[in-house]
Amino acid sequence: AGLISRDPLTLSAAATLQQAAQAMSERRVSSVLVMQGNQLEGIVTDRDLRSRALALGLPLHTPIAQVMTRNPKHIELDASLFDAILQMTQQGIHHLPVLEGNRLAGIITSSDLMLARRDDPVYLVQHLSRQQDTGAMRAIIDTLPSLLVEVIKGGMRAHQISRVLTAISDTVTCRLIELAIEHLGPAPAPFCWLGFGSQARGEQLIGADQDNGLLIDDRAGELDLAWFEKLAHFVCDGLNECGYPYCNGKVMATTAEWRQRLQGWKATVDGWTRTPTPDAVMRVSIFFDLRAVYGDPGLCQRLQQHMLMRTQKNTIFQAALAANVLDQTPPLGIFRRFVVERNGEHRDEFDIKKRGVMPMVDLIRIHSLAHGVDAVNSRERLQQLMQKKVFTIVDGRNLQDAFDTIQQLRVENQSRQLAAGLQASNYLNPKDLPELERKHLKDAFTIVHDSQEALRNHYRQGL
Image (cartoon, rainbow, N blue to C red; front, side):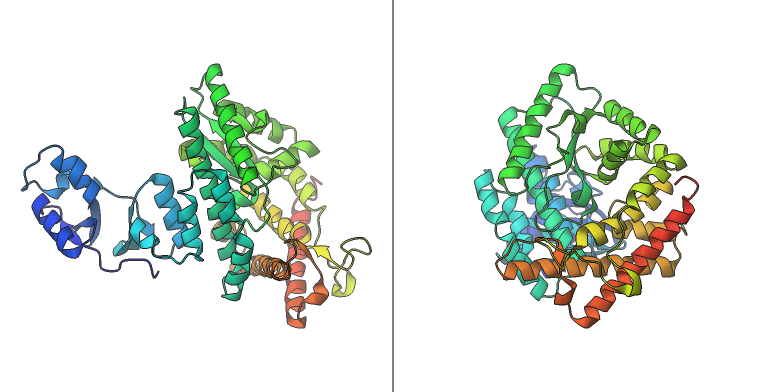
């Protein structure tokens, strides 16, 4: 909020080029927002004046409506700065109007973003988008552990932190694709780089590995596919060098199965959902959380629509997915005692991601697929499920509170580990928690358990 210019320069569409240039000069700003009453109609930047007016020799009395960008990209006031900077970086724009509903609330410019402190995540995202090699990007990524410790101390919540870390990995991915295109030449066909799993959901934390794929337009010929294979290796190798390790399960665009044309992807989805073998169910759990990170988002939307069409009425597939999910239960035994490892490296601990976060993510995903919910982020999925009356408001909010509690304790545990000079891990010793936090965690696990039982009963015939 501190980086938004709250009093942007505005003019009507009838104002002339000369009036716009004079006003911008007097205010020392690089853009003017064009208004029709209280409605944002367009934007004119100093670059527009040079390329669309001066270069064409337009008279000074020409209305700015003739050179403005109509219906400019904008962002809502309650969006995060990370959303703003990602939109500006990915779309190559330097001015982003901020709206509150339909009312103009201000503007963010690339110059404003440079005012962010060097230890501010906004600065990191902006800085990453300008690097020329993986070494420079890795140096920035290596500061993330200390940043995590500081933002936790500053009161940032887990869902905000995960959005920050996801924004950073998105930016690294986009920058690597830009560098690849500089190296390989332009893409021979439209494409979309896909993020899967926690990156797709906007729920990444420290230590995330790669889960990505490549969706290629059907117009790409066989010879074109070689270019996309080179792109995949360039980007995945670069991500590994930047601190995002290769996926052990090879869920990466470098693997042919995860790099296909749209028709190929649709056929793959059809096979997974028609014959839900254990291997297919495992792949589905990864793939069905997907998001466009770079390229043509329309390709991703078409694939998502196909996926929902194949899953929404497919109760046999849903039951197979549910059976796989219900294998992993929260670490809570009788008398509400935590179930921990009895021996080995993690004695007296449990994996809070595997036993707490993922059962919730999986549970929410199944309900979303069954009811045609197109959101990917777990909190947004819950909101849509409540709107569709799949969950009551009370049950939905209980699930959201449980998810937030588990994620918050997970990220705080990682922060303690990093502050002690240890590697961030998902293993947590419940005895390290204050009594009140232990109670909250038990309450959260109980909600997960009860929701799993409800899911089990719903699909009992299929299970």
